[in-house]
Length: 189
Image 1 (cartoon, rainbow, N blue to C red):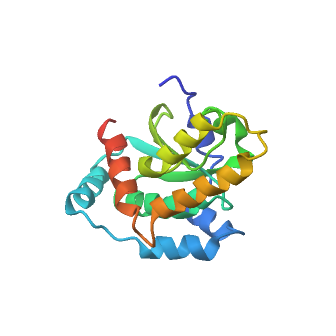
Image 2 (image 1 turned 30 degrees about the vertical axis):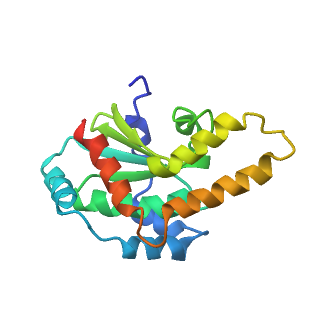
């Protein structure tokens, strides 16, 4: 990957606990999603437990408490990385736009972005901003609606956001997909 080395950002980032404690929006929902998480696939659980034997990986997560995708997905990421004993820190998007702008999705600032680095800060992989089965709706929308100034753009965006919510499902329905996709990323590093 041609992304910048992120070693210098490690000390500027906050811990997952600091992120959760400092939330001013969506704190209760985030906490509920964190508590709701459980392992539904034994092989996935074993994979993440086995990662605890590796001491060469870290994760930086670009996030903000106002983002619905962060509230749905990052509790799952936190729980998986806790199981893996993977050192993890959070970069608040608005405070680290230099990093955010290296990880744009379809030209836009979409969070969360989970970045896997080695201990030297070299980027090895990334995931985000949402599970593929949800993201494909946004990809199709952007392809079909390139003009953000179109009079019906906001109405169409509201429709696609509702469809995305439906794809996420209720409660922990999307958690297994997030775990599976994180496993794919981590399997390649």
